[in-house]
Structure formats: structure tokens, C-alpha cells
Length: 256
Image (cartoon, rainbow, N blue to C red):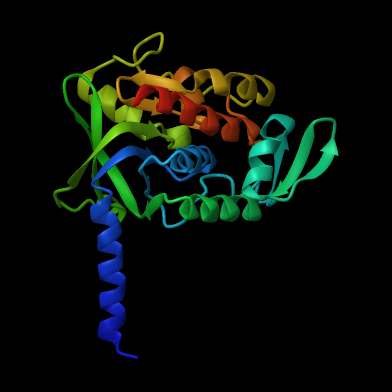
């Protein structure tokens, strides 16, 4: 076994995937549950999808469960999604189910990749590409470059639709607001910021907040609630999953 051949195999196969993702139908920023669900259902409809995650791991806050108890709560509305993905659910009471957070995110990641989605971890979004008042792509760099504050120029990709699934931070929406001013479809035109925890209200509003917020730019999951000023929810994830599924349907209508 030759170390050089191993290095060639890794480099060549990665670069093939990376280069093939320079021009995609949908670029999703953030590999949390809502972003992965959106990617999974888009890929099932034969859209070319790439997901970019700045961290080493994927899953957003799902893997940590609630306060590092690796269990999550899912409502009845999201059960069909979990059933399709193959995540084991145990009924707790009324319309609430318990899932193992590690099984949930690892199974979702596996199914998303097997559906044809390319997921790239350790890649950070520095900027967006805007053409004719529309978000038309992303500007990428290695996360280590950003963390080290090195002066290294990034690379750009094209996409028909860009999704901010970065959770509480709403990174892409904040970039757009900074670059072009308050032109998002919120009451102020800017990112309103998430409100304090109120699971019932947050879960009720997350699907309604899932939408296009600027031409070519869409939000789902906790990023949707943070952009529109809705509450955070904690370790209940049904709304996150349903939000990702809804955004697939919205994007499909938008880019046909």
C-alpha cells in the first residue's frame, strides 16, 4: 500500500466532487437538520445540490440533543419525514416522539448523501455573488483560513437558489444585509434576530417563516425564525424538519 496512491485517491476524488459543485441548482449553507432535509428532498427530485458546512461535523445542534442529553423530541407532523429517512421514533405522550439525536443526524446525513447531495465540511461562506439584484452564488474559503484570519482569496460558485440554513447565526442573510443594505423581506429589511425560548410559538411560526427573503436567497430552520424575529425552540426538531421539506417545495416552484 503506497502512501502516494492513497493521497492521490483522496485528492482526485475530492476534487472531482468539488469541481462538479461549482455550478449547481441549489447551494445550501449549513448542514443542520433543516438544510439536510431540504437537500435530501431536492435531490430526490433530481436537482443538483451542494451543502457547505463550516464545522468539522455536521448536524448543527441536533447531535447535542438537549443540554448534552442525546435525545430529541419530534412532533407528529414530522413523523412521516423521520419514517421515510429511517429514524427510530418512540412515542412519548400525545403527539410527541423521542429519537436518539445521534441516530437521527447520522441517518439523515447518510440518506442525503445517498440521494446524490454533495456535502462539504470545513468550508466557510465569505460572501455571496449578486447579479442583477439576485443572489446567484456563493464565495467560499476553507474554514481554517477564516479562523486563522489569513489573507487568502476565496473561490466562487454559481447557484440558481441559495439557502441560508445556518441556524441562529443567519450568516448568509447578514452578509446580504451588510453588502446591499436592509432589503430582506422583513419588517425592517434586516435580520431581526431570534427571540427568547418559547417552543410552542417558535414551532408554530417556523414553517411560515420558511421562504424567499431576497431574490435567489431562501431561509429554513432556525435561520428562518432568527431572520423574522420568532422565538427559539430548544431540543424539539419537528418544525426544523418540516421547514426543510417545505423549502424544497418552494424552491422547486421558484427555479422551474
